[in-house]
Image (tube, rainbow, N blue to C red; front, side, top):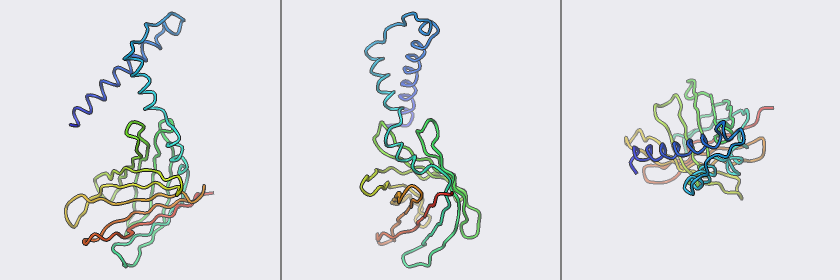
Length: 209
């Protein structure tokens, strides 16, 4: 679907929802006067939008990662390459009424200051987790989608990232696993030119006390 059409559809839905809310929360309604009855279409719109906007169990899973963390970042440029290790911190919090997890991280990369910000959420409409990331080592945004495995207590995702060698967009695989309430681990996997997967990054998080 064209992005312009998506925006128009979203705007139409928001306008309809706003009108419903305005009518049924008007001063007349608050004073006990009977507001106009909703049409069947308005009721359906209200019910569906309420379900779309209400945080659920999926959002509570993301909330486990809220808090202040220390990070140990290990990166590999290629299979068998010596690891680069750095330390950092992460401040994560649930925002907008528990709908999204915001992560603000700072560390170093090749001796240079590193700062990044990510947003994670669960889309009740598309029934999928999503993850975004921006940092000062680029000018783009990484976007991924994934699922949660309750047995492994882990989020699995596939994201799109720039491939500087080919000048194209590539896909990278991520795994974020809760070890316990005070520890979690994030891993990212890349592929070599011949298609073999290798771990390119691992971040160990420990909750600050």
